[in-house]
Length: 330
Image (tube, rainbow, N blue to C red):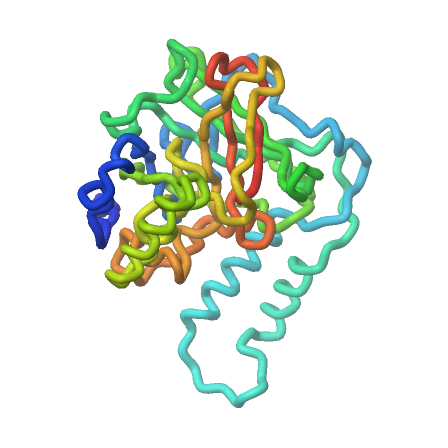
């Protein structure tokens, strides 16, 4: 078994220098997806789901045409394998020549160009996240309805217009493991609208870390003092000390794409709280201090990409898990 993925200690001790931030700390669970072969018994991203035998597989009601413009999932994954193999290939070549063979180039081009592909029946949703309560660190409570111990996220692999731009349409399932079948085969759609909405199967390596609010959520005088102090010590509060990057459970919102705005449950107007953040990247150049590995792994193991390199955030009502969840991009 590989060693656990561990976030390095933060470069600065924020609450010691700014005690007013201590009450605002939250524990989040970084999911650390890494390529693998998960089964339905594993917590995973893009892996098979444990599913009730009597429950039909969900489909998208907005995509029921007999054909759609998009990509074939099998071809997308074949293209990824070709490109990964080619990147590891060492051979001299003349500048300006293709690093792929003619056969590889044809396969890559075919998978990259959208085309009209038949789809009998509505488009099946794609498994995105499966998280067992047993895999969450003991410092964090499972964020589901009483009696449940399994969280599943699925989405439609086509763009759906939202208040902040197009995103996949998501569905959540809260399960009790004893009420589900040991395994099931998901009906993969014939066509997906965006190849970047098709996750590569990854095993999750959950780890709890402490976060603090993004500077956008702090009173301006405090945010200015914290940011100036961090900068004077060679760090950036926003990227090194506040909100962890990557896929995670709970924690603080990574406000950056837009400024914070009031959010409330559409059913009862109660406050909502962050549930899941789905980010294509484990970190980027600005958040490299959060990198848990040796630096040789891909920063985008899932092959997901939301919007223009943003993260998809799901929020749930603080009074009832039966109320509709919300999603935004950051």
